[in-house]
Amino acid sequence: MAAIRIVLCRPSHPGNIGAAARAMKTMGLSDLRLVAPERFPAPQAEWMATHAADVLASARVHGTLQEAIADCVAAFALSARPREWSPQVLPVREAAVRAAALAAPVAFVFGSESAGLTNEELFACQSLVHIPAEPGASSLNLAQAVQVVAYELRMARDASVPAMRAEMLATVQDIEGLYGHLEEAARSSGFLVPGSRLRERWRRLFSRVPALEREEVNILRGLLKALLKK
Ligand code: SAH
Image (cartoon, rainbow, N blue to C red; front, side, top):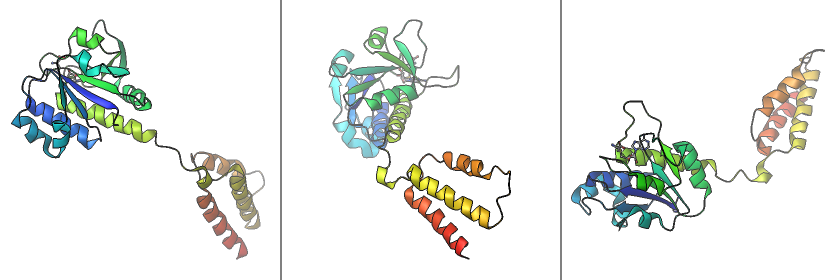
C-alpha cells in the first residue's frame, strides 16, 4: 500500500482534500499529492481529515501532473465520463488488482470537482478507470471516489495474502484416509447399500472445500473411529 499514490488535480474545495486524506488513511494509504490546489493548506482540509492529519501534513504539492507522477511505473486516470478518445478503459476493480501486483510507485489520478481531468492529464496516464454508477448520476464526490479506489486497493491486497502454510494442509493421502474411514463406517453400520453413489457423493462434497486442513481431516477421522468402536 505504501507504493500507491493518490493524486488530486486542481481540487477546488479544501474540505475534499481533507476527506480524501481520511479515506486514504482508513484503507492504509499515505502518499497524497496535490497538483495546483486552489486553497491549501486550509482549516477546512484539517477539519475533514480528523485522525488523518498526518496524511494531510505530509501531502506534497506539485505544479503539474507530470511532475507528480514522474517516478511512477503506472498511472491510472479516474473519470466519471466515458471519453470518445482515451487510453485503455479499465473497471476500478481490475485497475486495483493490477496496481496491487506492482511493487513500484503507482498513481491514481483524480480530476477537479468542477471539470474533471483535462485531456492532457488523461493522456499523461496509461489507463482510464471508471467507477460503475447510475447512468445520469455517475459523478461521485471527489473524496468518495478516492474512498472507492482505496477500498478496492485494500481488497486486492488482501486477496493476494500469501496462501496457508503447506504443512497445515491435508494431502491427497490424508483425504484418501478419510474416504477409507467413511466407507468403513458406512459399510459396518449398514448405511452403504449396493448401487448407491455414496462414495462419489462425498468425494464431490469434499472437493468443493478449497483447502482442507490436516487437523480438520483428523477430527473427522477421530469421530468415525470412536463411532466404529461403539
Ligand atoms: N464534473 C466532473 C466530475 C468531477 S468528480 C466531470 O464531469 O468530469 C471529481 C473526480 O472524481 C473526477 O474527476 C474523477 O477523477 C472522480 N470520479 C467521480 N466519479 C467517478 C466515477 N464514476 N468513476 C471514476 N472517477 C470518478
